[in-house]
Image (cartoon, rainbow, N blue to C red; front, side, top):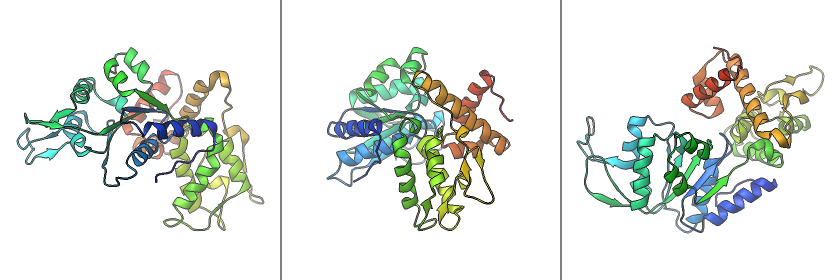
Length: 327
């Protein structure tokens, strides 16, 4: 069984809802910041739903990573001769997901024209490959993920309202890591266990590292935490991970003592302006990476676990807010 790590109340509630949803074949919309673990929750729902059918397919499509002119063919499939270069018939991802789960990741980046076609397929529960008139019946569990606020996208005219309501029968919101600090150490220890066979065995977290992990704002969320732990395991000293090996901003290393974490590294978050502090932390982290890697957008996007296009969007937003960005 696919397991999720949850110690904080917000995580427990979100994952409990995901488990209940798995009993019903209805569309699910999973929302949350980049790196919070949305796809992990999608895989959890699939695992619970098909617990007694391990052969059930799980097909994921990242709508932001596939070029717009290829996304439709990827989803719908195509027959031989449908377009230049179509030398053989290829089933689409929706067809391949039959009797299993289809994940549409980053659906907020799907072009409007394709959104209308997807909506029709969901309503009719059948699809035609490009270049074909044959109807193929569909029967899959649909899960969509996004790091965008789709209600705002609908209001701005960038996302179809009818598709939004079709997808959000039961929305699940995954809170950012800064709002579930009780999960940080258990997650870190799970990553140490995960990479013990491929990186280094018998690795532990120092007490100062535990404090560092708990005090940091984690703008990159769980994905950033996982990357930091991998780095710490590689750079461990005598089987111990210290704060200066994590690769996080503002670490003060002392030559004669265990490195101590600077409390100012974490941006304080108050209940009244939580969202703004979250954006500030994220923007500061990106600005630090831009300086560290001299504007290498491909490298930085890979570290953040986002597409270069998504990084360019964030950099444009930062410039609009007057944040100096290395270029």
